[in-house]
Image 1 (cartoon, rainbow, N blue to C red):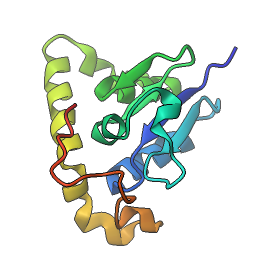
Image 2 (tube, rainbow, N blue to C red):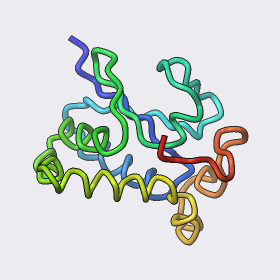
Image 3 (tube, helix red, strand yellow):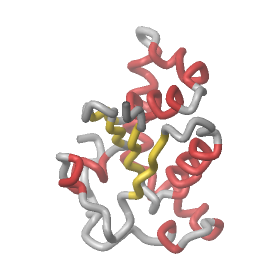
Length: 142
């Protein structure tokens, strides 16, 4: 059975890239597949999504094709690499809504927040988004 979680992350975002790399280093069972949406060869339609959808929030695709978004995708990525206990409290009633809201704020502003950190990126993808992938003023909450 294919038990690989595919995580669609934004390699143009220094925070996202570091988090994805950090998770992959902890993936001892090789169950996390990382796909950089800022890569020029990325095709959102392959996952039944649009460029606008994938540029808005983190997406993860379960082995059965189910698509998780936002904090649900983050929680699943941590679970798959054996670190689900770290984010387990974010599933509690009340706490979940707060973390989901905080993630939405982060997602909307991640590129602006990451600007000071771009100089330390190991790839030029951190310095500028891929053409036609990210549009200024795009509502990142959808």
